[in-house]
Image (tube, rainbow, N blue to C red; front, top):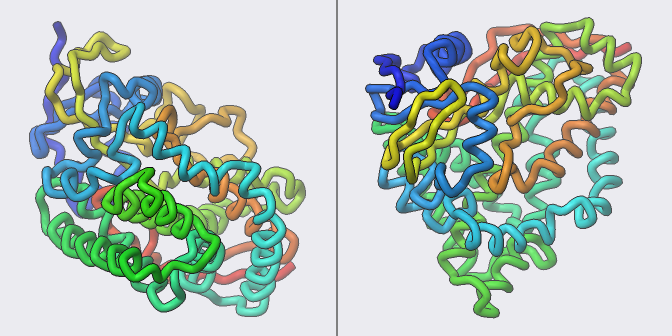
Length: 393
């Protein structure tokens, strides 16, 4: 048996989280699995191995939690991302009722209109912040309505969602602050649930209806709603802001989209590949597993499955660090894969495609006008602020 190589790299240091890709490459070069001594978990970062792990829920289980500390794993035990089949399969069916392509089809016109209006405002503003002025618009306006959250809690839910990802990291200051925010978010959702404050007709109302009918418990409904809040808002916001950042740095790719707006969906996928909004999730290795290079991850280990590292794997992608909206390798793991593939990826793609199609018809180029501020987070990758200019054309 070949044990994983060991490394003293701190994957959760500020400097690494700000620019993790050189570290990911170093870990990939060490092997298909590397034991990180700082967190006592095996890092899986090669595309082939990450995809295999995401498909093999029997070996790489989510049911013991997707975080690197027992507190978050206990708090999130009712969240969909912390379930394995058959429980996961049954509960996911509730979500797909509102997020399937058929269910989302009536939203296409609404999203298209909102994207057109947003693109008009960005063209008129000229100078804008790609996070607050741009990326917040569709996820908050469309998704909040889709779920049915009351208007007065929406800003707070968005703020708490980011912190909740921090809670999934190892023991550090960000993790402790994230746990506090997660507790506040769970209490807020419970208050909304108990007082039936959701708007009628939305996903939240359907979820609560399932609980009242006895199909799922109150705790399960609250946990699933919490999981969807965290996954649905911040990730799409991160991808939209990252799109502006990538296009500003790659004007030839923006011109390519302007010349052929049909590339918008491919561009959305490439944004998610290059700047994966969710970088890593943990899993529990339930039994000895052989990786692609013969390394054996021993049963009982915690593993870190890295979507972001896999998406930059030179074994899978030509010029993996380059942003190429019409690249030949179309498959990536930015939306996950297998049973836990992102349930909301259809909606996210719809939003990203609509907004960059609308912008391509109005904007000649994007320029960065100030120093971007990264939101340093244990799990997610995005911007706190991104000053930019949209030059009409």
